[in-house]
Length: 180
Image (tube, rainbow, N blue to C red):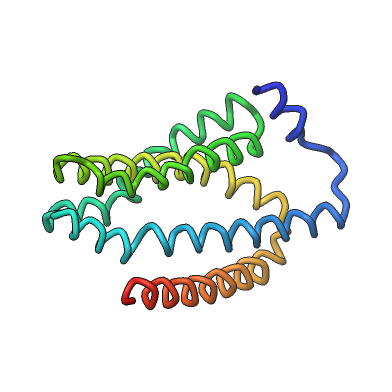
């Protein structure tokens, strides 16, 4: 499997303007996908879900702190990037590991004991953010090489604007849906 990934994601020495444009499109699409996922599974909706399961104020605080607690994953990210010497592989594999974990969250509502559901929610969120921290190390380093220094402000400004707009629309639509 690792050999297949290495063949697919082998770095190249000569990067064309078309390659950069393609990477920018991928980064924007990734931002949109990330924003939709984050809006629908985390934040306000996660808090409401945890409260519905009977979460205490302390657990709500731990869920809010999970992204910061999981930042130790950056150490693993640095180790993997240095060991594998391929940021693309770390980024892609970590992304494919972290995001599907969120599909486990609805199982918490099906647990026979509510406390087990709350433990599942916390563990899934913590592991999701830990793997996301691993991915973030490789992704930020990769973006640094793909987006020229004099263009980073323009690129990230446009990306954040797009992600914010998508997040607002998705959040409002999901809120209206849940109200009905």
